[in-house]
Amino acid sequence: MPSFAIGETDFLLDGAPYQVISGAMHYFRIHPDQWEDRIRTARLMGLNTIETYVPWNAHEPQRGGFSAAGGLDLGRFLDLVQAAGLHAIVRPGPYICAEWHNGGLPEWLIEDGTIAVRSRDPRYLAEVERYLGAVYEIVRPRQIDQGGSMILVQIENEYGAYGADEAYLRALTDMTRAAGITVPLTTVDQPTDAMLDDGTLPELLSTASFGSRAEERLAALRRHQPSGPLMCAEFWCGWFDSWGEPHHTTSAADSAAELAAILAAGASVNIYMVHGGTNFGYTAGANDKGVYRPIATSYDYDAPIAEDGTPTEKYWAFRDVIAAHAPVPDERPAARIPSRILETPLVRALGLVDAGLERWGAYDTAPAATALGSPRGFSRYSVDIPHGGALTVGEVRDRAHLLLDGRPVGVLDREAHDRVLALPAAGELSILVEHLGGVNYGPRIGEAKGLIGPVRLDGEELRGWRAAPLELTADEIREALDARGTALPAGAPLGGPVLLGGRFEADPSGDLHLDVRGWGSGMVWINGFALGRYSARGPQETLYVPAPVLREEGNEILVLELRGSERLTARFAAEPRLGPTEF
Image (cartoon, rainbow, N blue to C red):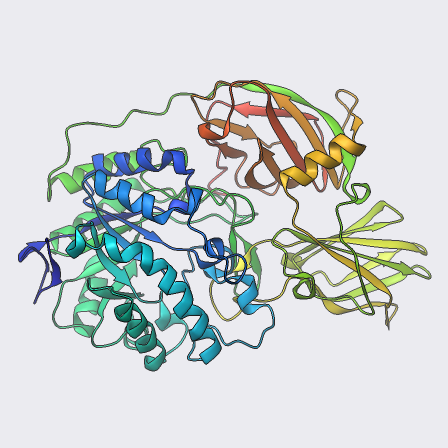
């Protein structure tokens, strides 16, 4: 069988020096029918390896319900990587960051707040061991020394930026080896002395994450680790977008120069991201360094391979750099073909508060969403107020839409640090709370969503609440519209929160780009597939619609519009519009 090992200065493939030229793409951010295409496009850029994270919360949304089916079929993804003639690197966490909801940690693990994550807490380690065991059942037979193509496995993720517990890292390492993983094990940290010291163990290969000053960062890594191969395991060639911020881009020429410096130094590299993909559904994460910033739906990342799978200027620049150091196939991927331009009316509507989707529970005081099962999408609250006055909330996580007797009266937004709203009169107060991304980096990972009390009116805590989780699925919305929806008049604007539905015809052989300009904020489903959130705050102005989602005829579009829309049509643009690069 082939072998892969760590040498004095290089990786060794069957005993010979080997420079890993890898790119990150996440199977869980790509429609599974498009995996093969994205892998092929990466191979044609000159890569010899594909790297992926593994998101625990996607694979095990309920404790004990681990699944690797459909779009989570890690084994099939790794098999496609091998079939393309490429090696694979797997980073199973248990924490992955990745701008992914809660950094990949499942809600059920953290909802009671007593388990210390990313630590030696025995309860945490027991759950991690069970999770890693399930992942390694998939990974183990696909290692290179067992006939597969997998060459490296990472332990934890940027742990030096979070903690300094060697015993915790050693427990993860022991679990990994006990599960039959024999390939070399790595860690990754930003190349500062403190992070490199705290984030690894002597028996693990340290790698670095950076996007600039390659020579300086590689030198720092070498000072920390005098022998073994140098590797930038996250070469940041772009960046992610957050709602309300500009679309991030980096110079193709500057990024290519940094890549050239890494390869010229003889170091290995993993381009983060070679193809970013999409935060479909409710999967996007958030950052909070004093101000909460939820991640956008597009995870294009200004990567060499765009969100829709097409090569960019950066792709060709990187391909030229790689060709100076390694063989690059003669075959070239096709350029983007403009998508079909369509417009279709949204013909049915139903106010969300009238849809009857809640499973209400009674509570004395307003509960956090952990009491409701930590739903991914929304939570809903209702209470009778005896008079108007100043409503105050301890904290909203993450955006609350308030209605009094069914009429919108305001919004409390976590990003604006909103805590107070004036209510005009007595009545039934209904509060719909959007659960935006779970924080994926830093000490606020795993925090509760919903209303974080107390909730008071003129200083007196409100009591006698009803509350309910509200995940919102396409099936629920469709059934509600069929049962209670009303026909929409053509052309008139519409306020929210409201459920909308329509149908359209499209050629399923090509992708579409849903133009959300003129809409407020909300969610979209096409043929039951959750495209993700949209927001008039930008930056992105289109949502990516993968071709495999479409049907020959009778395509269904469902929309949850939370604020209001100035048009009641769904438009599809010729190409993606990810927004301005400066505001």
